[in-house]
Image 1 (cartoon, rainbow, N blue to C red):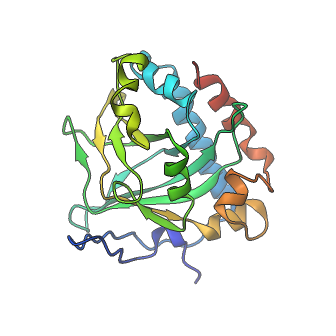
Image 2: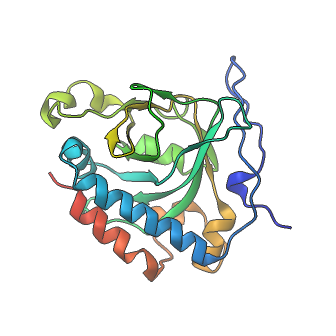
Length: 233
């Protein structure tokens, strides 16, 4: 059986701390299942964009170079402290148009929640090209390869620009309809090569999907429309 790369059991060597993240084995799914993830991402974008609490997130999206959406981030009960979830990366160009999605998995040894809630929906707003370039590698670690901070909520974009905007990536999370500030420091982001190949009908790397835009899939049109509507200056 072929195993989906995003949930292969992997060992990710950290820095001196030797951080290890694990993912759960799962078979490669048909393109309809990748489409299901794209559709779930659209629902997350629509839902969070309609929530007044996430006005700052929408404003930062309008200035961003891309976003990563993880519709469901779960803790794996049989791996102590382990968490993970499949997601998509979408780039935003200087004209404000969004790219087709590239598939990724986020895996973490532990996830710190500011309010102690379980995060189920996560949006990572990528503020700078450095953060996007780091994610476009086959695998990267948040906090090491790109800086990450909990995204401002209700502080006003102009006020936050002078401080937190220095972070490459802002994380926004919601659990059961409530804001859940989440720290993803040390989490690994892994490219899902098999899922990308299945969705686009041939092997293709994330940079060609997100930056060069050499492929497309009509199934992502609704997601891109949702992102266009969610991002506001």
